[in-house]
Amino acid sequence: MYLILYPVTINKIIMRKIQFVLVLLLVINCKAQTEIIGLKDRRGGEIPQGAYLQDIDNDMDSFVGIYEYNNNGIVFRIHLLKKTMVHVDNYFTDTLIGEIEYYENNTQLVNTTSQLYTNFTNPYDHAIVNSEILNNSPNISFRCPECVLNEIVIDGSIFDTRLGGDLLLRRITVNGNPALKISIFTYASSKKIQLGEPQTLPIIPGGDYIMVKLP
Image 1: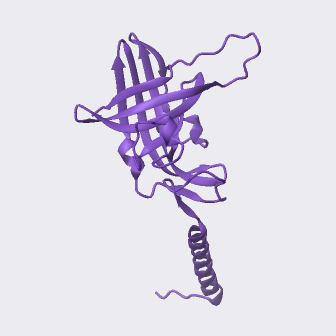
Image 2: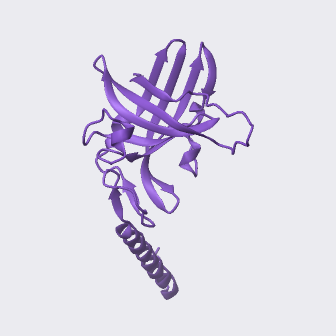
């Protein structure tokens, strides 16, 4: 039995191959036109449309994991993951995202860990988003006086389900074990406080926390 290909069928096959090649060339061309900017190299200013802020040296990888602060009846854990090429506004970026647990005297006050693997359209729907490396930024001197030049420090934000604040992550060791020193500061209310209203307080107090990495 012989398969007979009529001219119309051959033309369709050729056209499909041409369309496939054109689409492939378009994808390659789009990737080639994406401007890649190293996260450590960025020093403020407007981000070009379509640019990719990339963690070229994989500095964020060493921050990934679960970390715990446990002291005086307070247990505070953060769960950190790295995501690559996350779409934010009109550009893409590598970022650390995370979720939190917070307990006082065995009473759970915050637990957002069920959202850790949720692919939110907006990464800021996660409790923690850290997408800026301050290894030798002018901002590092007053925010982390003990940091040394070229030390990898991650800057971002935290939201404790009530208020949001700035968050700084610094790698340290505790008794030879990997740990983080995290600093929470500049809390701001998610709503405008009217004159005479009591100020809303965060669930997780601002300040410094030494958090040991869990196995």
